[in-house]
Image 1 (cartoon, one colour):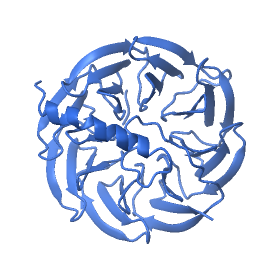
Image 2 (cartoon, helix red, strand yellow):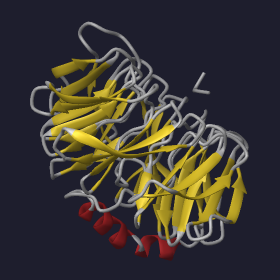
Image 3 (cartoon, helix red, strand yellow):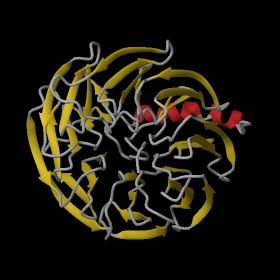
Image 4 (cartoon, helix red, strand yellow):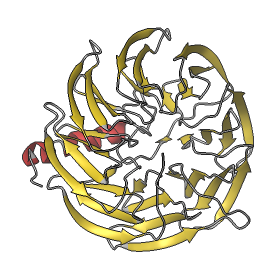
Length: 376
């Protein structure tokens, strides 16, 4: 399905931000973990060190159901959900299953891990905290509609959106509501974080900036089209794709749209999230292309064609961009010029994004399989 109160624990949340930002910075060199969707709270999947192709298959894990969620990895364990409502924990070294938690309906989005628990939502509208040692639920929280939003974890708050049109902040220890903020329509995207602010956009066609501690909206910027993609925020600029066939750069402090990009030949929506690095905004489109856009001017630098739509958000490792396509392939292309470096054929449509941990890349497919690829 797609887009067709009183704050609590404020001091705890505020005190946590030093640790949060330190974790975000340390993850960008060459990740030892991938604890949340796109690797960092800012949702900018960029690693300084190159994971150089070709990669070879180390192991594969059959979930027996299609997988749309992007894997996350913490302490040598891989976590992901399948579309039949099962959430899996798999050993990174061997590919052997550790446990399976039965949710109520499909789990299309990623989770996040913190303090010995993994947090995720399902299509029934339930949000879960599952103990990573036992695979048993610590608590559950019920929203009023499906959750397709990957959560962002802070020590004092877990943030996620729901199709009941709310952004939620929950206490990760108890599952009690810190606050909720009502928007005007469904929230599909995953919240991004910069400083003490979180950012969401949704079917109401607005980018909303929310104070994490207070749960109060500090700025609203009209985009003009509905949004399913997760924003990436880098140095005060939010980059986001829309179902109006555009990619936007927005100065969120000033509330100004700096530029709008449209491909010169195609007109298709953007569902994937961008990676922002080296003067480029790299993003997949439903025109079956990966686009590299000039970060300052919003003009096209290069594009790379595939044979299926690109809903998989790219991950940049040094000078290599990895992403999946509905044509069933994982691609590696040059960041500099968009030339194909390598590809690996999976058994089904690729909706999930890659996750990179050390010299491994994890990618799932609608052929029911999670693949672990390793540098040769």
